[in-house]
Length: 53
Image (tube, rainbow, N blue to C red; front, side, top):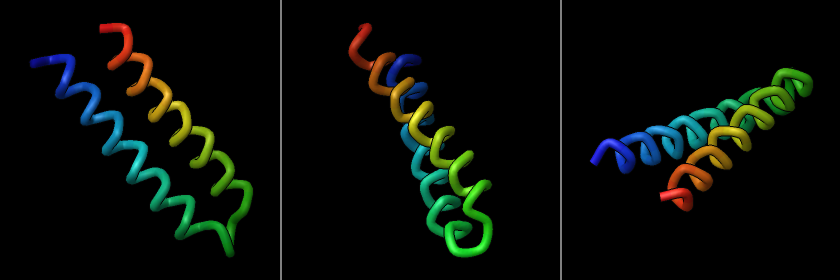
């Protein structure tokens, strides 16, 4: 149960960060790049956590 909640939380965080990338892309490309890296880390962490199972 706890593992599933953590994976869902990381996926939700990645989604929020991708929304931030979409929003900031035209005005602040550096910030959008940082958010993109963080989103990829969150998604990768969710996948790794799910597979490690």
